[in-house]
Length: 179
Image 1 (tube, rainbow, N blue to C red):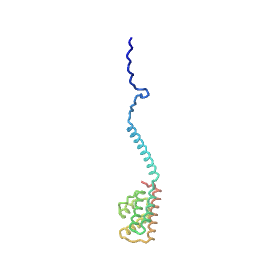
Image 2 (image 1 turned 135 degrees about the horizontal axis):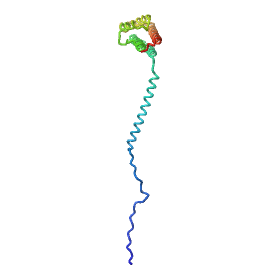
Image 3 (image 1 turned 60 degrees about the vertical axis):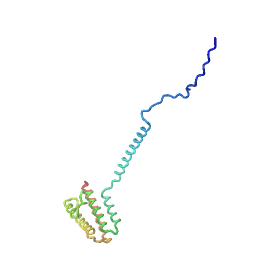
């Protein structure tokens, strides 16, 4: 029998060391996961910021009394040479305190209009109203008539306004008149 023809060698096929398993296709792309994580971090940061802000705001609430005394002191410290500005800032501190603490709307009124509104208020006695009239008249003279004041008069006005603020504070605390 004749010898069987020799077959050529087989070409090299895939080897098992190059074989990979099935490719997994995820439900989300990597960029989608990154955006989601970024939004979660942003949301958590926003919530922390709002929490810290609310805590800081409630902790730093200043009473109208403290604000008025600080405004009066600032008016005295910042205007040693400017009598008109001193009168304006001091008057504003007193009026704002009376408005905030006692609910007496005075910021858009003239002195006379404010004093007329004050007459119906039973929280403040006659002495307070008389002293307030004198102080407001002094302020009007300084602001509108450009009447100069000495350092002694300035100190007297500061002390009188501070005393008016103290009296109004005591009256509001005794009667619970906070609006």
